Image (cartoon, rainbow, N blue to C red):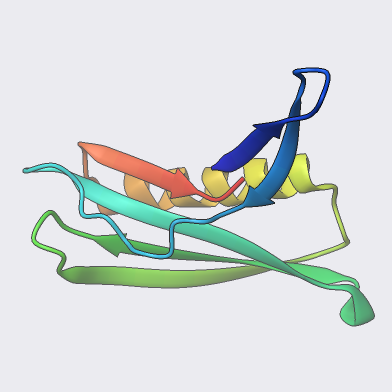
Length: 102
């Protein structure tokens, strides 16, 4: 969420950025994949972590993936979401919410 204030000309200017630090459970009968990535520039690699939880906040599974290269942020987000979708298919689950930070 970006908070803005108006300058003397009435234009919005970004003031600060806040991030939701609390996990929110999915609606009843749904699963939630939380997905995140990190870059290891010194190793020329990036990693993706995914965590699956149920609607009662129960932990189900987690997995990490690594790949070579340092892609741009859009490519990294696409790759991490693809990995979560592949896990969903492999686990044969439906009613899934994917949550990524952007």
